[in-house]
Image (cartoon, rainbow over all chains, first blue to last red):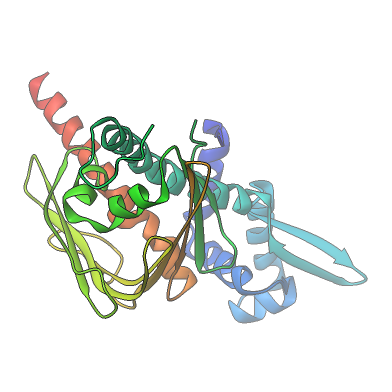
Length: 120
Length: 165
């Protein structure tokens, strides 16, 4: 079960409160990109984009790697954490339904069935 | 002893659910295909299922509707069966009906739900693959009938508790 610390959540909310940063995450969701490419796409200076990337990096939503003179950005571990949280949410709901099904199946096997006489 | 449900994401638009049941396959199949049984386990706390119609054959249609016990709001799912191989495989196209709920997800392309059952020694394994029209559609599914149904109930409960305080 994924546990969240309040401070990290606040930082994430702050990071995500900016429309450009949300746009960056969406773009990186499709493919990795260099800071230069991102600056071009969002029509801002390299310095401006570096600031946004810095905020996202701090919260773990984006990770960057410099190879030569190119710094490549991609979605970070925090994003994967969000995916894990999504899966867990989905699983919880499914499991609640299936637990009710467990109860029903138990009931159906307990009462004699007119269809089958092979139950132990 | 049944193992809890497991959920995996095999691709960016699929969800794979796996679960075992201490019951013969025929019973698990019945529970998924007979309306009077489906109504007893599929759904959400605080919601009734006033409509559960199922014509389980290739080309047959189904309709599921849930109504909130407190405020009467409704939502559901409907669709068509495309493969029926009792008691091992059931495939249907599932459309979301937002009803009068305020969900973000548009009622658009269907999700293809493929259910497979296998049995070994009176333990039945269920494998359910849900393939959505897109990644966005899948991601939205968390905030549609599945979880917003739950959230809606909890929000109503909060309202009631606060009003009583």
